[in-house]
Amino acid sequence: MNSVDAILDFAIAREQEAVDFYTGLAGRDGKAWMRDLLLDFAREEARHKAKLLAVKGGQKLLSSEQRIADLKIADYLVDVEVADDIGLQDALIVAMKREKAAFRLYTDLAARVDDAELRALFLGLAQEEAKHKLYFETQYDERVLRNN
Image (cartoon, rainbow, N blue to C red; front, side):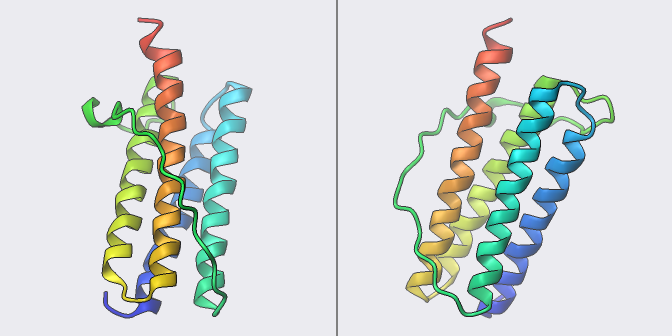
């Protein structure tokens, strides 16, 4: 994957997968607040996809320089299966791990491109994914760890 278009196509496909994942997961949860939260994340991933499509179409975008804290909760949790009756704890684990993988993806893509603006875009998207991961880690801490 060497061309900029190939890299962008790959990232666009990953964002669509994220949209589909969060939308599907939202349909499995009976709690309105959790369903709404997951649909919000699906919309956020759709915005990431739109940014990437705009860049592929020739638009230049600036990135965020903000650095997001990492609680590293996801680093110490085992992988879980996404079942039809997935509970809150497992849903949060899956979401944390997906956001961690997305962060690594954008960090790695940034390292593979020579274009400074594209690198900045990927690093900005990496920080947005880190923000999502932090949110899920915080929810896990508040709703799972503190209740056990």
